[in-house]
Image 1: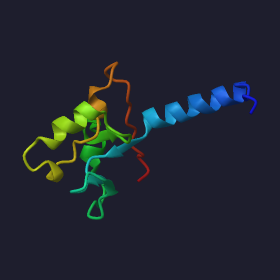
Image 2: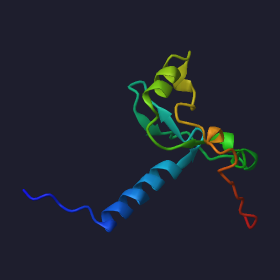
Image 3: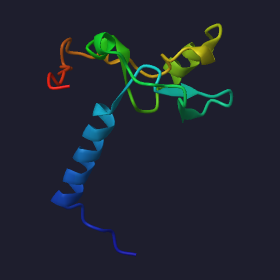
Image 4: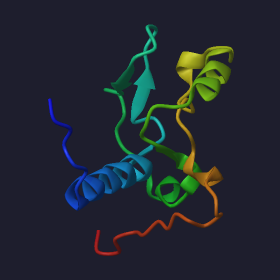
Length: 106
């Protein structure tokens, strides 16, 4: 079997996939962790209010948390009742790297 050459298109696809993984965020409470540690959409979630929607601390990276973060979370009392099992964007470096815009027409 001949190895495929790594092309510029392959490189670009990898960069786009990496950016997408790093930039997907979800509001607090939109997803939950089940008793079997599966990530599921929270069927009871009804959206975020206007005030909270402008607070970076109410948003989380939508990607698999690292093992240490997840283990620390699971040792909390009533862990499955909390939504902070994902990494919060408010702690991203550099500070202020996220900008939240509100649509004034709505």
